[in-house]
Image (cartoon, rainbow over the protein chains, first blue to last red):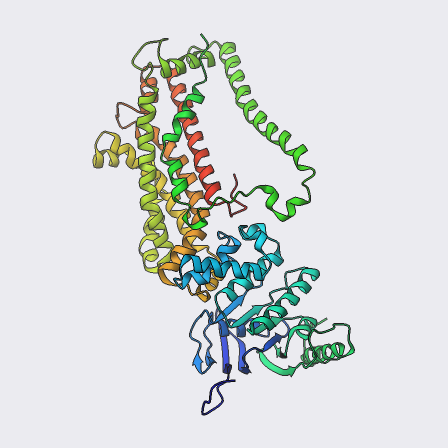
Length: 266
Length: 317
């Protein structure tokens, strides 16, 4: 909780956010009147069909895109650009291919002008945290997808990010690796107390990971519902409770789809 | 008398070129620690490890064998055709071999060209690498600027596109007016020829950096000139090296043109002298020396680029 402020200062607040892209001569409305408040340490999943603006919302929170109107505030300070408090984990990793695992993880600490020995210490700590010590001197092209994503996570954590923005981070991984990384992410989350905003299109993944699931709808992107998941952790994917949540979420997603006159929706 | 292989002599000489030093100095981004990257380090390689020892050696032997067999076949064909037609205009490979030996060590013809290979090779190499180095010194920073700064791109890009299609040989008369009859003119032509591939590939390298890498670097606290040094430059390196390889090839191509401007030494001038004296064996000797020297230095550039770009799976040529 915050220290005594006159009004409640939310950790992260998205206020009246609108985003319109100019594509050629056409105006495409990606987000309309999005409002969202996220508490420190929460694990929030943004879920929705493709084109619902969930990635755009994440990119605006990251500061990679300016909103058309509205703002994102962190402790009442508006986000104006990328910052090391928010670390993005991209689906396609976006590691620096010319740097080794250790050097990639050291990239953030190195920017802060710390002593080389301190940078090395931090890097080694996070290399170890994601279990990549034997591969510390490999280049990204010599790693599997799961290893690359571990590096990407360690890279933002080593930079002291307290908000982890994850854009379908495990979407390109095989099922076994995905499960393993989901498990590791939850361990990292509970150990570090980092706030996670996780974009996915998998109901199962959202149910497994999230404290809260924000369901978004497309055309234009809006928040449809915001559902808290109170299932106990660690969650058992085969339990009746898990299935109930998953069913509710799926209904929220698909009922919306059926309501829309989509001729091609199969 | 059998002429010893002059190719090995040249190959032994070539590492004097500025190449090898650059290997150790331009490694800063990738870190000085030697990281041996053997193919078996790659995770997927473990699968066919068993097949590796049996297959790789014949592969390599085959590559070398085929690579040598073809030029030998060409030499045999050349010999047979000269003998068959009885032409006095083209020397046999044997005559050229004698000429090469004489060019390298003397003792056969004992004329103005005997034992002068090092003089000419050194003169040509100085010009080739002078022009090449000048093209790098001007082309890489200019390419980085054009690629990164919109105003400079708008200022220079149309002019560059206009000048680029003009053949370097068309600059010869002007170059002789600017720099007179001499080596400086040759260096200028080599520079012009090498400049475009360097600058264009550098621009391309800078322009094609994945925008996600900028975002990743920005969120990790990198900005401004650090962004340039830590992201743009290393990301553009593969493309810059492609430019360097192309430019190096052009530099050797243009040395003959450059040395037609009336310089007394250099392999180009040897070829021109050979032509004027109807010494075709000398012409072919000059051609072979240029080919071998160009090949050897290209291998050096490839070796450097393999080292600098050992992170890039596409760059092992």
